[in-house]
Length: 138
Image (cartoon, rainbow, N blue to C red; front, side, top):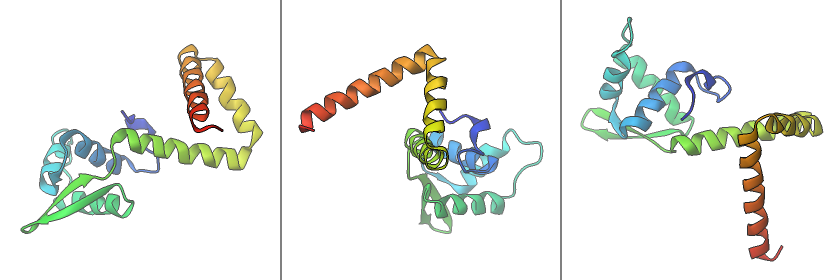
């Protein structure tokens, strides 16, 4: 799950992240349904137009799509939460490598070494990659 406090690094504002999380949990929803869910825990309720505008901004970013149902808009996520996290991680990793090069790789390795679970995950991914290369004859 995408952590709520990670929204800034993921290129989303807090409200964008919250609305996207609602759609991931509930599936395709009318803007009014998203508004109701978000306003359940807010002291100051958001206006319907605010929710609708944020959902439309998420659509411009390629994260949701909508269909018109009468006079209402039904929004649905275009990517799963896992796909979103993977895409953002890949984008940020690429940016770090382009900007910092070898220093970014060294820092990444140091962080992974400090966490045995991450180190095991990395070993597994590398082994799987080696197996895939063997199958293609590379």
